[in-house]
Length: 352
Image (cartoon, rainbow, N blue to C red):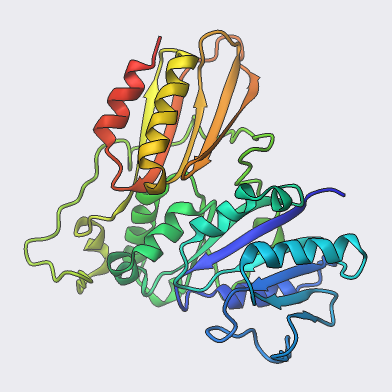
């Protein structure tokens, strides 16, 4: 049986997760989707779509989709769904996990790699994060969960953009780009997102054949190549840093979640790099949300693609370097208060 693709749908309270999910479930795409809700009480899917019975764990919907609540832990729920699919008791093609608005997506993502039974049944496709443009500034200032949801994202959808000014939206996009330069951003209206922009993104192919993002090396990085540790404003009203003019707020925050990019035109020594990354992940793994790289390694004519989440890291050979193509390594690290100087100095010492 081929692996079942899984999508994690996350975002802070009120960001529009349920609206997007409702669209995915009702759109005439012909796909049978299993939805795992990890908290029914907080943002219940509308009753006209889903009639819940407290005694039922798995509910069949009229369009062939199914929905289930987590009565035990996520691992047990995923294993139960996969077993029912194998036996022909349930028919579905993919899984969407809607997290509670206060959830850190990290442990949810790790579930797919830490357990052999789950890893053999599922492929984690992507983490999709919704950001509420109207309330994002305050949420990102006040809540580390909101920052982590951005840091983990493979795709960011910005909702409620019609409720803010163009300057406020631009400032938010700048801030999100600084926090997570690897996730594309898209403004959406009432969850109106084509299904192909949510599914089969291949954004999270850890421990699987890694696809090379063609734009990764060419990405414009003027926003995040320098160290953007913005100091709080002199009259900053911490913790929420509320400012009357939204266009200024990205000058007044100092997010715990930050990203930085390391580039080099010298080849890495494979053994030295492996030792260094192993040590760094061992020490800082819990604070390393996502990291990814396209590397020039001594001893191979092919690009090496690596990425990871927390302590889990995977790498694979990519395509060959083209004739005349500049050989440049580029790595992006997204994490919570990562020691940039230690990482950069260590990486420099692993170059040949």
